[in-house]
Image (cartoon, rainbow, N blue to C red; front, side, top):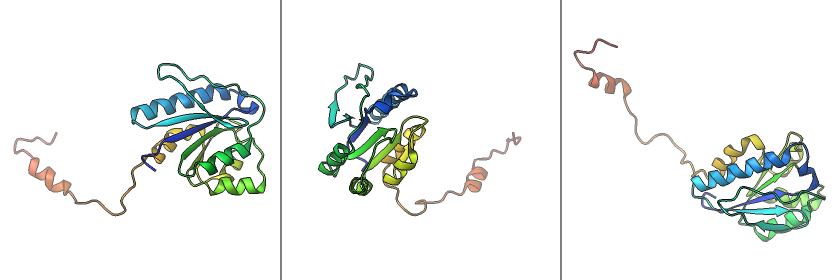
Length: 178
């Protein structure tokens, strides 16, 4: 997954307009933009309400959120995820949406789906039942590093260094042990 383009889907339901979530969301999006720019990663931003639609922000312009109103249609997210099976997806949401059994199963089968719970009232319990990749907003940095972490090779170091021997070799006779 280290070379994949990230698709950041922003929940624009009415509950995302409450309890300071808009400012938190703006700051999370600013951080994602900064992180991806610094690490030369590609990210697309999409809004989610009745459907999933791409948002275009100029690099010089600050983040502007779409209006948060109504409810987000979980069927639209399921359809979009199903139509884009190889896509790396991060959903910024408070988790307040209803799922039927079929939708819950479909979402839980998407392996490349990361949920970021936005707000102090985020329903992390529900998000955790949908994905093993569900995190609170404060863990965004960890999530971004996890997404683009190069695969770690199992095993020990390639060679060992004898630090005691190195120190003894570099000691000077004039050393007063300070």
